Length: 440
Image 1 (cartoon, helix red, strand yellow):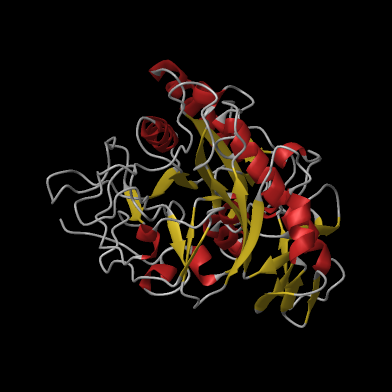
Image 2: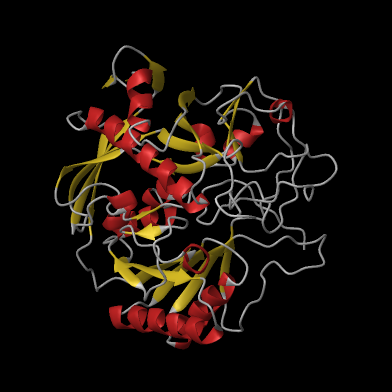
């Protein structure tokens, strides 16, 4: 497959009388954007806000993040299958992307009632006292600063962000609220992307997946958590492949399919379309590696037998492709780590050299291992850190992401964070960030 990716750089974003793009400036009609969101009758209140790099702004309640992309030529649509979009195969032709921009749906649950007693509405990190005495009560570490030291920890802190703040609908499940919010953000991203359909990109990269068996053959095996056991096979939590979030056998995708958004959702839509592992290997393809493609492996199986089977099939597929090496990542911790390590073990036992790219666990002051467990077959590991934020976060002038005025705590300076499972500020599964941590 051959895909041209044209990058249109967004240097400024501002409000104006109409939605258009010109000379690096994206002008948005605020009323039009909000009307797009309100097309869903389940959404009663919304507000569109802008946060650009250097602004004294904190973004709270982030749900998903989307980079506006549009298929200019070739089959399918950008982000196929995502929230009901067409599922025709993508990865060929030409796609324009708006570099330096993200559409973030901020889902405010504060006024929403439970649809069933005790329902977990946020599926986010612990907000109730486990962060330490210095951390403000009721404040989650899942936020985005676009200024100060914290802006460098997540890719969105250095982007121009259009935030779509949505009051979560009442009387429906948390999963339904999640889907409503993501669908609204995609409608907005689609509209914005249309402004650059006929724009000459600042630069164009061409990716050709034609096999080069004369070079060392490498596969990429990302593990994607499925939340099917919690929300059912059609749930909208978790990353989806062509819109499918179900537990399934490994998917084999071309690198260019990921660039067209074939993996989306779970807050990772922008990240997976720009996955640095995929982009690096695709740029090296035909030069010093033969990039075979991406074997997308599911995690969250219900028992050891299923984990073993899934790992076995991923190894069989990698071997059948002729992989001599593989890079393996995972996008969540806990028991899903079992599946990741079994896949490492399976590949190594088939003669495929594996590099594991991963976050570390909380070191518990040096008393705990960096990985939950590691088989003897694991030889090569690249760490992306533990999620520690040593310098803390300065106070901000503005907080966006809540329908009504957020509590005063959100404006305050926040102390340093010691990363640990479930409450880390940084979730860097693919090597985006600059933080790292080692004290062994």
